[in-house]
Image (cartoon, rainbow, N blue to C red; front, side, top):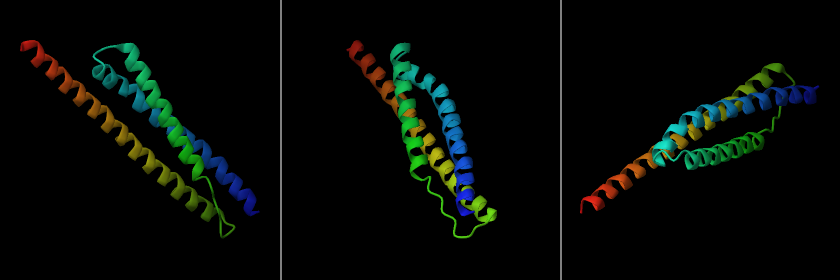
Length: 128
C-alpha cells in the first residue's frame, strides 16, 4: 500500500514542480526581455538570444533540482503523512524558485547598471 501512496505523491509533485518552474520562467523571461533590450542598447537579436540562453539555463537548473529532490519516503502508511511530506517538498521547491527568481532579477539589474556605466564612459570619451 505504501508504494501506491508514494506513486500518488510523485504523480502530484512532478506536475506541480514542472508547472511552477514553467510559470516562474515565463514570467521572469517575458519581463526580462525589457532589461536585455536596455542592456544591449536596443539590439533586439542579441537581447533575444541572451534572454533565451538564460531561460534555458533556468529550466535546466530548476527541473534538475526538482528531480534531484524527488525522493519521497513514508514512515507511516497514511494519506496525512503523504500530504504533509508533499507540502514540505513543494513548499521548499517554491522557496528555492523564489530565490532563483530574485537571483536572476539581481543579474538583470546588475547588467543594466553595467550598461549604464559603459554608456557614461562612452559619453566622457566623446566629450574629451
